[in-house]
Image 1 (cartoon, one colour):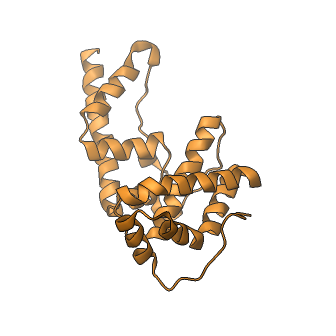
Image 2 (spheres, one colour; image 1 turned 30 degrees about the vertical axis):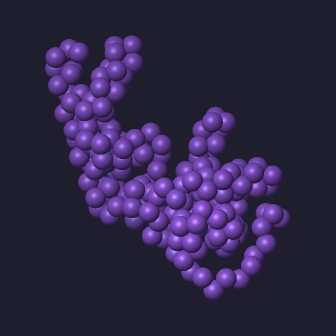
Image 3 (cartoon, one colour; image 1 turned 180 degrees about the vertical axis):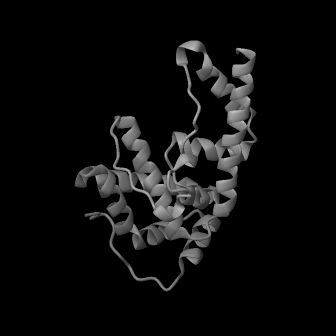
Length: 196
């Protein structure tokens, strides 16, 4: 399991190692930071890939992504951010391979027992051009709402994951999704009324 990483103790914190990497560009600092969580990354990859070799390959791919992403994003909690990055990478690989993943959810993130807020309750008739109408309405949404709607409904991320990735408050993400859903419903309703 991840034979290519050897744990070396370091007295530096995650934030210090990350800061040293960001300022110097030296991969050794990033490598030391990744080593701390290599088992976590491998475990997440194994959960989705279900094959040891695929999981190792995925873990290495996550490290390769870190080389650029760790310098592009402001990271406050490296472990949590890395977990989300790893999960997103695995989900993208599964989508590319056309495989389905097991669904898991946190009941605490559900707003209502019947789960109605998790669906956009609008019938879409692809043959009637309504799919284009949905796309047009998505484009009209404010950017925050559009990105959160895409992440939640199209990419399958939870509120918590979106909040961590966007580094925003969970309540704000929930608000973006609810307002975006309402705006989509209004926009699509107008298109149906006009016969578009």
